[in-house]
Image (tube, rainbow, N blue to C red; front, side, top):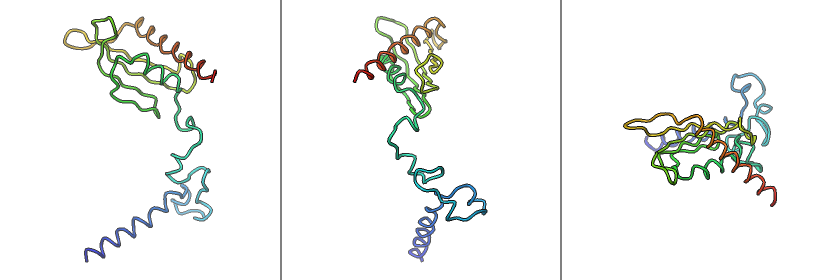
Length: 160
């Protein structure tokens, strides 16, 4: 009885694998299933098609230059989490060279364009027993440093 149950469960799972390629119209019951199945490269393909790409910028919607420049500029902070698909880098507490103050940063890269509006930085400083936002001037200086480094990376990349 146990083998029969496992066999039926395996058969059910195997049969359900083919449903991922169907479009929304076939899920609702309308339309021909043969016509609803998407061809590779068309809208609504299989789940594995998300990972097949020749151009890495198709799925990742952030600037690679801003991403690399953020990591280089804030390299004194440990990276706690980084998601290139959403453009978020969360960094832990650390001290910049030559300073006694500890900082924590969150970088949000909103757009693939290499522009100031594509970058958003949240900088927090450790104060006493808690934390407080860093001054607007310091945030602007760090953003400018990231943008300057990103431009340098783009110029170096175009010379290849």
